[in-house]
Image (cartoon, rainbow, N blue to C red; front, top):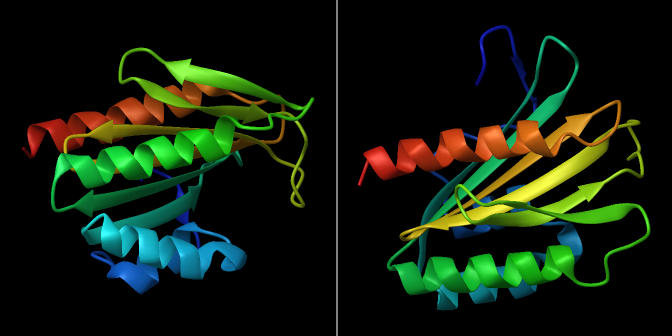
Length: 158
């Protein structure tokens, strides 16, 4: 978390088990299906963290670890498909070629008035997903930088 940022009240202590991770990352309507899929992919643990920066932008990261890269790749592929299928007129597909990240930028403000960028990548047996929320136009560069930071930490820990 950046200096001067305030953690979201919903942050959970890491590491998270399957149910806590899925319920912290997915919308309620997806919980049952995602819990089954993550179990099949041999999910081991995860974390979800969000914070508000001093400029009022917000960032959210989730990292899931699987027993092997195949599980992470399957989760990554499903997430990219979900993000990039049926892209609305307010959404643009975005990529981060540095870490093979993929996702969307959504210029339709959410209930808090924020635009969003959602990028994800696979790093070995990890799935990394980042969200960048801004009160102005979506900021894919900030999301890509956050993704790169998370990927770098995971690569160093291997």
